[in-house]
Image 1 (tube, rainbow, N blue to C red):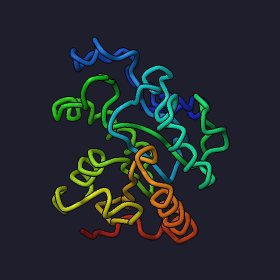
Image 2 (image 1 turned 135 degrees about the horizontal axis):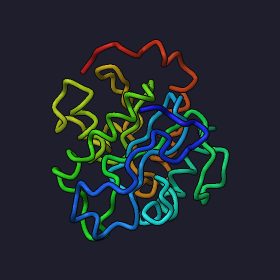
Image 3 (image 1 turned 90 degrees about the vertical axis):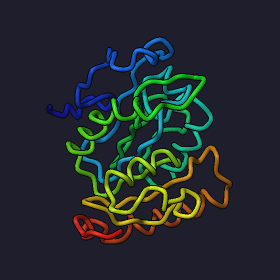
Image 4 (image 1 turned 135 degrees about the vertical axis):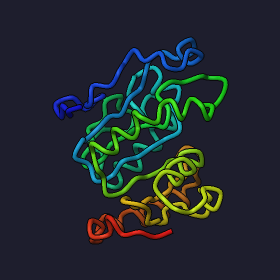
Length: 210
């Protein structure tokens, strides 16, 4: 699988007509694969497409929660487009989800997350980022299970928000979804992540902890 960096949307050419989860095929508008810079140091992983992404086909776009998220990326210098852009210009950032399809009535099942796991694993393997940012509690639980030796239940998104966590091969920085966060909590993340970006974070890769 090769990356096509001229294509920021689904740059790895993943199946856009995936039918591995029949129930979701009936409720989704489209499959939403990853989007952004395939050479990124930072990969942001949400739980599932929001209502906006289900329409646009681009992760973290198309609705008010997405605008709040992209506003944070703008403040960090990772996004050069307005927060309401449906095709944001990203620098050093890649956006993706645990699952690629949306049911408007419920979150994804454990089975659906397992079924989609090869897509996420392939993106992470191809990009080989320095930092993975789980956005939300479910993303934190799944990413922590995959990339740390600590039981996922020991992590709490509110407690570990913006706090670097060294894992197996990648450092994790959990993020409360900006659409659900107070201004103060959002500011905390921006300040913490800005400090990390200004540090020698590339030297931490491969260290094992937690």
